[in-house]
Image (cartoon, rainbow, N blue to C red):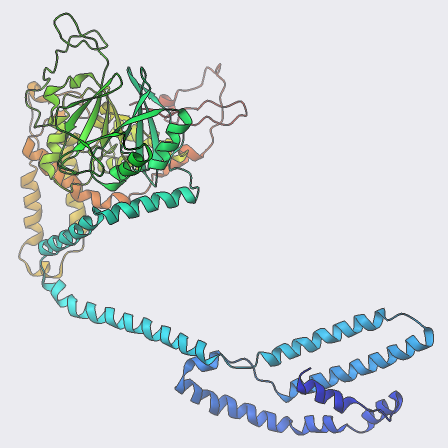
Length: 632
């Protein structure tokens, strides 16, 4: 029992007086403790005023944190409260004792009253125990933390103060060059073993957290000699498993999540023999060594010699032919994203006629390794029956609706990849890319050309799929040539449209401070843009190209196309800021009322402009759109 409570108990004890006498004496003459409490009221008031107006300001000057750590002090009021509670408790206990002795009742009422009194006393005692100031160690640690934070903030401000004059007088092109060099340093660090270690660690963390894949509803895509199984992993990546129909041998394409690929192979009881690596980045080649270890070092891992991909033991070159079971896969070299980036083309299963020429599945004669284009810019397409291609594994060379970053190339490499190296690939070929970027890319494409009907249609379908969490793989070369902005740079009208968009954006951007002192800066820039994209004149019929360019349009020169690619790269910095159109959200979120099939007044989706009614399951819920290539 605390000392203050013991003293209160001694002061309230009156063994020589009865209860009635004690109550009369209290009413006639205050007890000694009561006199002391009332006598100390003036002293408490003086001490409180002294503490509030003298001690507190001094503590605030010495250390503002010391006041915040203290609890309210214990005053004479607390002692008076304890005194009154103890007196009341004694009176109650005395009355209960006499009642119990007289009536012979139980002690339940005593226990209940005593428990309530004990709780009140414990609350006061707890207040007394909390009246100590904060531990000096805790106060010192808090001061140290504030000191470190202030020191870091001061150091940052000093660094900014010292570097800002340098930034202010440095031209923009030099700042861009320095930023590019800093990015290159980070890129080199990423391409080391440490980068692969952290990639695999991140993939393991996703598996441990049981996070579902970024896309569901993936289905196999059957081809003439094999089937393709997409494997979504991480935030937006894809690996693929190619299964040969005849031998059930498998090839894994870019298996950067070796655990997801291994799990799929075990569940389907497939035999992995080959790994196809499109390029060296760890989100595509990072799982090669893990799979090689799991399968006892018996896998053949293909990759281009210029990329030095992790775990590669079989180098490929442009025009090489790989066999997985009875499936033939051609190698096309498409440098831009990386120096040794390749595209794997699954060739159709045609036979061979009496003259040794390969026959396609449609019965046409293609000729063994007869080039469809005499000039293929070193891709190897001229050495393969590329117009028999049924699908392409494009890695990051073509990311559905766009292309990968130009890490080791430029606009010229991008133009050659799409319009020369892959020009002979048929429109029917499916495109399996390495990332789930199609929704973002098509929003960007719609922003560039809002009037294009094919882009709007494709964007609407992709938004519907992604709203249901479905995969957008695969695309097709037909869709890419219609809606991919980098394929459309051969369209002169399209180039003029994106040039106008860039011009309006540049006019509204905040310019560097010294530009205001340059004579005729704005007019010179506008004149330069006008010179680069002169107005289109009337064209002859032989200048019109149909298909693959979004309709009937002027055919741009290669120089104009390269300028268009530069414009697309410049505008792509705003790609992540483009919001989803409200119409797409409403179309996917607003339920449609089912209509009767016998209603003569019912309009089709094309007549009404509304989204077509989707089929319903047995429970009445709408069926999700089926995965597969988009239809335009």
